[in-house]
Each structure stands twice: as C-alpha cells, then as structure tokens.
Image 1 (tube, rainbow, N blue to C red):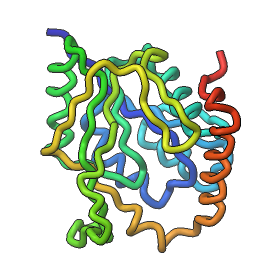
Image 2 (image 1 turned 120 degrees about the horizontal axis):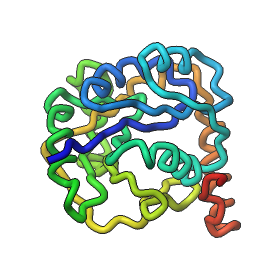
Image 3 (image 1 turned 60 degrees about the horizontal axis):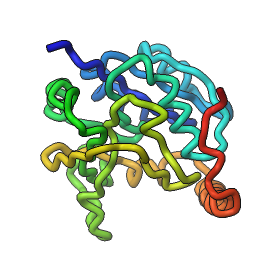
Image 4 (image 1 turned 135 degrees about the vertical axis):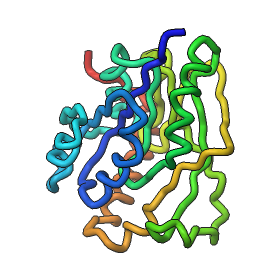
Length: 216
C-alpha cells in the first residue's frame, strides 16, 4: 500500500519563546512542516522556523476561519493528511510514531477528522497538571484529511470544521499544552487579545460568517 503523506501545518505570531520545543517533537514524524507567519510578527519566529527547514509564507490575519482555510488551501495538493500542533504544545514519541500508521490505516476510510485529548501543564517537566477547571480530556480536532474546500472551517473565532464524513477520537495519545506556563512569562498583550476575540465574535454575527474563504 502506498505511504500516506503527512504534513504539519499551522499559523503563528510571535512564538520564538516556544516554537523550537514544539518542532523538536513534531518534525521527526512528518514529511514537511508548513508555517504561515502573521505579517505583524515582531520577534525571530520566522528565522527560527526557516532554520529548521519549515516552509513558510506571510499572511495578514482577518479571522480564524479564513486563516485556517487559507492554510488548508495552501497545503491541499501537497499532502494526504494535515496535523496541527501549535507552538505552545508538544507530542510524545509514542504519539509521533503512531501517526504514520494511523494515516495509512485511515487513507481508504471515510474518516476525515481525528480528535485527540489535550492536557494542560503548569510546568515544562509535565509534573504539575492544571486540574482546577477539569478541562481534560479537552478534545482537539488536529488531524484532517487534505480535501479543501470540502473540508473547511467556519466562524471567525472558536472556528469549527465542516464537511467531514466521519470523525475518530483516539483517547490513548495526549497533546501537551503549556500555555499556562508561558502566559505569565512572556510580554504579550492579553487584554488586546481579548478585545480581538470579542470583536471577531461581533463581526461573525454581523456578517453571518461570510468572510471565511481565501482569495482565489
């Protein structure tokens, strides 16, 4: 059976503090990494990912659905499957080794989307898990079949995948999330981010989510 191609694809902005750590855990298990970089990025994110062999391009952020659809369109004819692991996340060796077998198994199935549980950590050593709000398993849709525009995103914020046939949930492999560790340690305008999210919610309702398609 022909090998199913798997690429890593994400969009980023100002992630120099954590992106190398994520790439260390992802790059050994994917064929290529495609990273769209927000053109307002002011740190060394672009130089770092290029030094790691990632394929990059700049984009201008408008809303989350349109950005992710642009990403899906960009890699659509370059792969069979897309894994999205964010800069402040990591995966284990066991998770990575499982991926090639999984995508090959799913290639001729009707499964278009795979969800994984995510754990939230307060330290990089993964000894102090955040449990106060009982988020786990916090299911995340992170593996998608490359078939844009049938498979696409809607909503300007808290985007949702559309067009999938079947979804598989795999409970034995966690994504590790370190946002709670990095948040107090980086110079980031969290108040401005909250304003953006609220504005996107308002625009999504006002425009009825029409602005989700990348430019032709």
